[in-house]
Length: 358
Image (cartoon, rainbow, N blue to C red; front, side, top):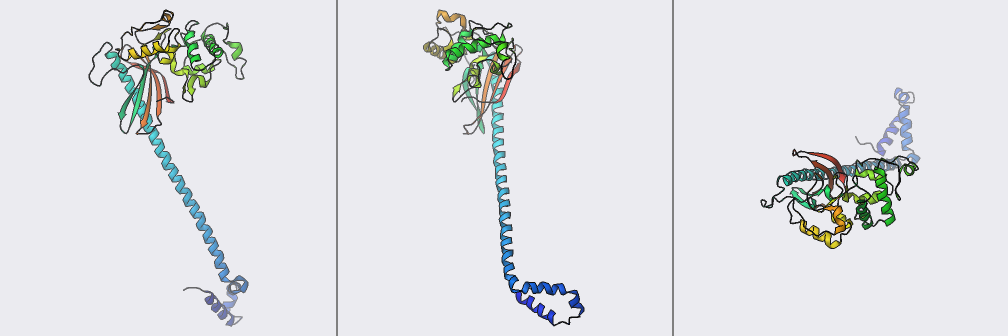
């Protein structure tokens, strides 16, 4: 039965015709008053219908906002899950590159003196040359760097400190600041409390807002350099497409000389007596050498005490970057491994993720 305005009027008329003392009227007087209120001119049912319509519209609006919020949240979660999956895939690609680099180091040791190789199986170079390996649905690039081609800050002396000083100046550091950094590094690791001309000992470090003492011992990590006077994150890590000194120093070669077979060009240019022409000649000639070849490059007399032209170390840094399809953003891993004589290896440094330049 459909109740209309006329229906309510008809019911009210019938109630009025009933005897005032009837049981129905006594028990349902409230019903009568309700109907009178509804049918009154100032409480027109049509006005109440308008109010109900407004309420319904507000409810629908709120429901639409709730549904839209859930839709946005679901879409955000979907994109987040997709991005996380792709990042995880690139991480696994980068880790696969590190394992491939270790395998290539064993292959390198196996064919140390070989000059003839199977097609496609030449020994990977350990001078930072980048190699790409396709591994669907992406690929990874790997660089192997022999630590003997870098400047070892643990074996740094007042004499060999000239190389590090030149490296800093060539990278844009002021000459005075470069001298301060080199002297401070030497003061940090020496056993005494005597301060070099531009260095720093306990008196400087204890005056800092957060005081500490000079270590007076070997560096355990390269990041420890951030505690040394004059070293900033920008100098160590670089930035704005500018390399930091982290790529050119080490604590694992245990050598006071630079191996020309694996030294980066920036390190070669920091060697006293080396010119850009000599550095280019070294890089050009070593591309055709076997793993134990001799460069046979004429070295200036003043440079001979700082470099060597043969051999390699057993410490290598592997930089691997995983890419997904044509994505330019990569997930990169840097690891340093030591290969022992029993054809085993151990990680001495592992960092994930890192920023590397393609």
